[in-house]
Length: 394
Image 1: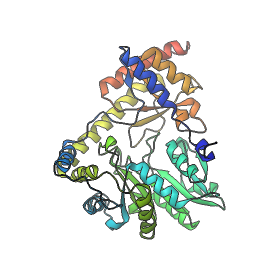
Image 2 (image 1 turned 90 degrees about the vertical axis):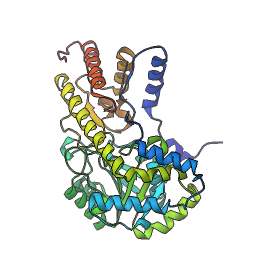
Image 3 (image 1 turned 45 degrees about the horizontal axis):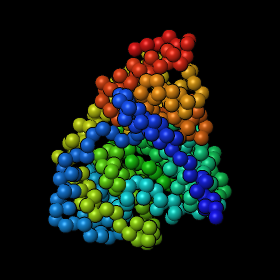
Image 4 (image 1 turned 135 degrees about the vertical axis):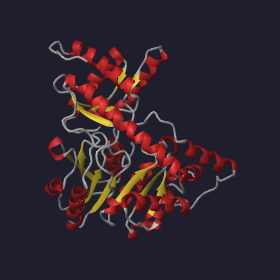
């Protein structure tokens, strides 16, 4: 019996095959530098761990309301008020099992078979896959340094069709780390509203901005659906907790959907997440953000002699999106050979881009500066062999 045909739209992560090779090489005694997975090397902050342990010891393990602990929804609302100066009704905030849970809810609510969705190419592949599972057709719009590696209002307008229902943005983005400014975000929101469509914005790397203060689509328009997470900035990857800010009219159908799909998010994780907004925790997160910026700057400086520094440095997240076309037009083979020969694991661009991924790679600066510089030194040796005409060095 055949599987649901929509499953064919869901591609496997190519990087997982590389991760298996990397883990096998580590087991064999090789020193592998992991720059492939989007998970920082920082542990979950201690205030969060302590709060989670207290929740367990106090027996706080029963179901919460489907939309989440009222106290956590209120804490997230205060976070928006304190950080972005916008007042959001806590009832509009739905706590989900990771940002993926929020994306699933949004896709099921906003699109159906026959609808079209516009989003940037490259993008996080699950953004495409969730829409395909809902039956929609994704129009992946190629972006570049010229557009700031983002979907602009002009691109939205030129690619919007009669049956387009949704525009999806990610700022800061994965895999490029680039952001939209407040005026750019507002223009996109206005363009989508003019066409009577929906706007969905992925903000899971929002706290990790380096050159300008973070902004939120929730502060730009009350009509946006905004996805965020406790994983990246708050350091709670394995706790699997996120949230969705939704327009008021969408809360009731989304809650019904949550009751049926998730029942509720993890109770101990929700109690732990309350501590993420304490002054002690926020101070630690700021130190980590500054360290990430230091890593970004050091990595870009190390890559410059190799001709691989990005034309437009990322303003957020913890990724560099590198054009390797001067060396290779097969990013999968390039990454595999680099791993086998020099024990450096990076991600092929084909995991993210439908067009141009074969000559791009993503590097996650999720380890310390010394290890990043060692990785670039190994990359330099590799390039000297990979391309005989290579003249660079570090």
